[in-house]
Image (cartoon, rainbow, N blue to C red; front, side, top):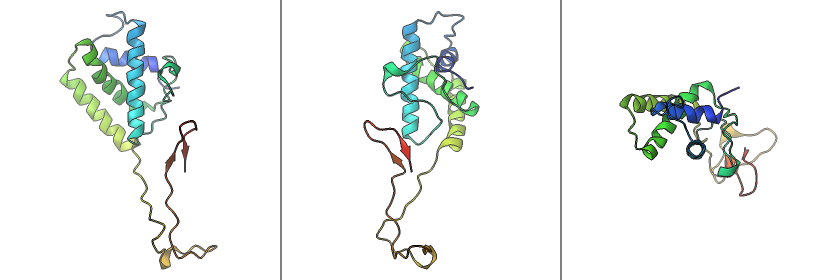
Length: 159
């Protein structure tokens, strides 16, 4: 079991000096930070950083008590970067140590989670002598395949 979204949000507030044991966090504050968390994770998803975080279809369908499915090595990066994103909303400046820690954790996250896009040859390129298939004798490479397919009302599928 990994961290819940609530634990990530509360960790981000603690990172900027607004821990729940000192400040009473209002439900609106938690929901606002949850929306920022969801949008940050969707942006990272768009960059190719796939961590298993359940990005909601709409802001209303996200829950603070939902499991984040994040691996343990990614939690520090998420909390630090979320803290940096929510700090200006409260007029807080983020400490240099927090910025350094968030950047360092994000770099670790990039090295472990970013998957490069596989290069595909165009369908008009000759396959050459080394690319013969045993069952089909085709003189050209196969047509390129989009590695990530999604429609407006369909589920995300990987090829």
